[in-house]
Amino acid sequence: MKRIHVDWTRCDGHGSCAELLPELYTQDDWGFPLSRTGEKDPAVPRALLEHAEHAVAACPLMALRLYDAPEPARPAQPGRGQTSRSTRSARATVTR
Ligand code: SF4
Image (tube, rainbow, N blue to C red):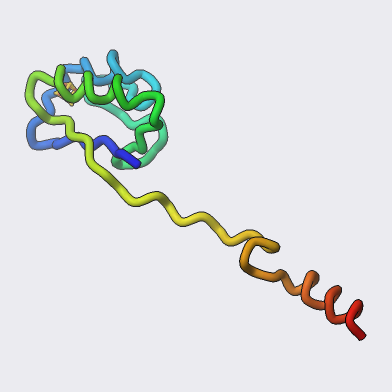
């Protein structure tokens, strides 16, 4: 999974990132990008990767960067490698 990062030491609120990636960024009152997801570095869906690469290339201060991030861990689901307590007790009842 890719994430996009704003280097705040470079960004001057030019605003083109919010125009090119409106799904991920909006602008605050001064033109600085605000993540729409609330994440510091929003995850970039595969469908938006090309747009994100374009936004990175278009940033006049080279303040945007894409990087690889590990996929978030998914919670385990009963029945897929783990057995829930109710499933275990139901099996125990059947085998008696
Ligand atoms: S385009 Fe670059 S400089 Fe402009 S607001 Fe976005 S990150 Fe900041």
